[in-house]
Amino acid sequence: MSERVETRRGAPAVVPAPGWARRLENTPWAFILPAVAYLLALSVYPLVSSFVLSLHEYHIDARAFAWVGWGNYAAIFHDAEFYTAFRNTVVFTAATVATELVLGLALAVFMTRRLVGKNLLRTILIIPMMTTPMVVGLMWRFLLNTDFGIVDYALRMLFGVRPINWLGSAPYSLISLIITDVWQWTPFAFLICYAAIQTIPEELHEAARVDGARGVQVFRHITLPLLLPVIDIVVLFRGMDSFRAFDTVYTLTFGGPGRDSATLSFLAYLEGFSYSHLGLASAMSYVMVAVIFAGVTLYRFTIMPRAAR
Amino acid sequence: MKGGSAPAAARPAPRVTRLRGAADAVLTYTVLAVILVAVAVPFLFMVMTSLKTNLDILEVPPNWHIFSWETIKQNYTEVLRARNFLAYTRNSVVVVFGATLVAMALGTPAAYGFSRFSFRGRSDLAFWILSNRFMPVIAIVIPISRMMAGLGFLDTYQGLIIPYVALEIPLVVWIMRAFFDDISTEIDEAAVVDGCTRWAALGRVILPLAGPGLITTAIFSIIFTWNEFLMGLFIVTTAASQTVPVGASGLLTMDRSIEWNVTSTVGVVTIVPVLLFSLLVQRHIVRGLTAGAVK
Image (cartoon, rainbow over the protein chains, first blue to last red):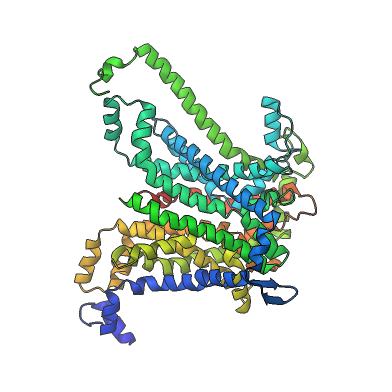
């Protein structure tokens, strides 16, 4: 056996592979199946298992494990905290995606000017994205501190704004989370849009200008339509990531005050990890799975075909 | 609009142009400065705080003249030694490289398969693999931690590596596929005609050509795993086996006030390796980000 392998390494043409190997050779499955099998075992199976768990009352400390059907779902849909978390997650996702896209796009268009230090700027903008998200939460927790945070100090000095309890009062704690996410991920929207803008032939812009289009019109009728496919991608990636936000919530507000800034991921974590209500936590996370599944399917069957054309 | 006045005639006089040029430059560099400040300030404050004693932090506006070598040494020794962050860093490094290696080994052939074979359901299967990237970790973490517990893998390197590989495979397949798609199929066809098997064509001909792609993909996998927090939180139950982010979260006990200087030092220790690494390989990061998105 080993001898034959060696021969084949030395003179590949001489020893024909056995029939089954030949057949396997010409299909993609030998290449693809290991990865697919791994994902089935460690992504799909846990996902299914999580669903089964969501139909049970399962309290890890009490060793209780009992079938409750849709009981956990009924329970969370009567839970005010769940509604708050759902609303928070939707607001957070919409606000971060919209802001990051608009800022990133504006910055990308802006960067098409001739200017010195372009590469430096690009390097600088990579940094927030690569920073450990939980540490980003920590940094902003310090900056937004009411007593000694620089943000409040700057607002007070520049605009005379009265101190804001950023992390400890209801609308502001969610706003703090949004600010933090925008700080970290606007560069992602920028880098993707910027790369796409550079693939647009300059003649297109020139032609439009010769035809009398001005700055805004060129953007509206030439740049924007050509950027739509990558805008879709930014919305998909950022949307899905924002929707399951956890790390910065954990380190910046810990869902506080109370549960006022909890996201779905965070609430499910609290139920599962801190209170050991694993069935309930699974039901909560399954609501997220349903939403994400809907979003991803929508992308796959409506937006992706459009982009491929 | 068609056939409007010639652009040259419409241009304003040179003097005005120069003024507008100056205004333009002012605007441009103001924007650049704002971005620079916005990115730098959070880091600056964290680093500064990590150099102070806990009392000095409370001064607003911050006092920049109170650094002493003693305090710096004290903060960093406390974090690296007394709070074990050297050990956590070692744990993280082992897990990060282990997971990246396995994910690349599984994901690269799959990416090649998607790039080189056309078969029914290819785009659906490829998209399904990518869609795993969007699944909320919280929805799989409970069964996975129970699996790992069943295998006796809680608090072990393999207990972290095994689930991390699953999180990284979608990333590897998607980025590597974009790189393979850029390599002409004629090259592997020539290798096959010369008697190579498909695997040999991949290993000896295509992979060497896809070197930059492999590096880029590995970089993303490394950074992603280093930063991962939620899965680690469930798999790690003892202090000794913590990864850096999990260890850092241990400082955030809600019931007592945070020691900001220590916390900031931990923050610095957590992100310095990943940022140094990112800056070293930034060219690849830009390529990787855009490989899948911009075609």
